[in-house]
Structures are given as C-alpha cells and as structure tokens.
Image 1: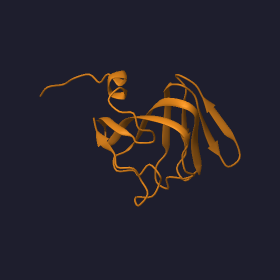
Image 2: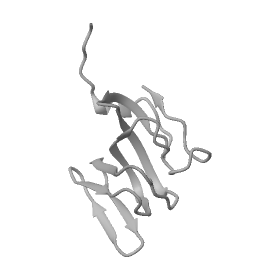
Image 3: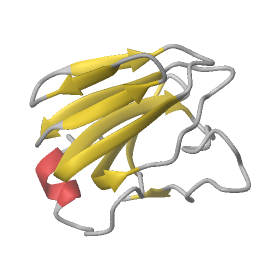
Length: 118
C-alpha cells in the first residue's frame, strides 16, 4: 500500500471553476473536498447530514433564514442537518468541505454538481 499526503494548495491549483467540489480524500465514509466559490449558491438543506465549511482562503457568508454567519481564514461552521442555508462569497474563496460520500451539494440529486476525485 502506497500512502501519500494531500497538498490542498496543489489540489486547488488544478481547477478554476466555482461551486464544483473536488474530492481529495475519503475519511470513514466521508468525502473530504476542496472547492472554489464566488457569488451566491442556491438555498438548500441536507435532510440527513450536517454540512461542514472550513475556510482556507478568502471570506464567505453562510446565510441562514434568520442570521448570517461570516467566516474568514481558519474559521469553520457546521450547518445542522435539515437547516436551510446558502453560502455566499463576494470574492473568490477556497473551502474544505467534509460530508458523507454521495451527498448532493444542492441537497437534491437532480441538481447537484458531479464530484470528481483529483
């Protein structure tokens, strides 16, 4: 078995599109992903899983129906399962996401981005 480390900056340098999560590792049945974001994502929720956001660069707002959580570099927020939310980035930001493998990023399989391993 050949084990290697994951360099997140290197992985982020391999793509430019926004709102398209890229799987960089698997951890106990969870996808560990990097993503570049800019602008507004769709309002959505995940009925059966929490949604973890960790900011690697830039700043994002996690809009909830009753408040907005602003995250900067090194800050993390977990949206509880079933809570409707929308990530928004005024300028490009880079995030680390962790969620159960196969979880659609929009909360709906029909509208979700396909996730590829890089």
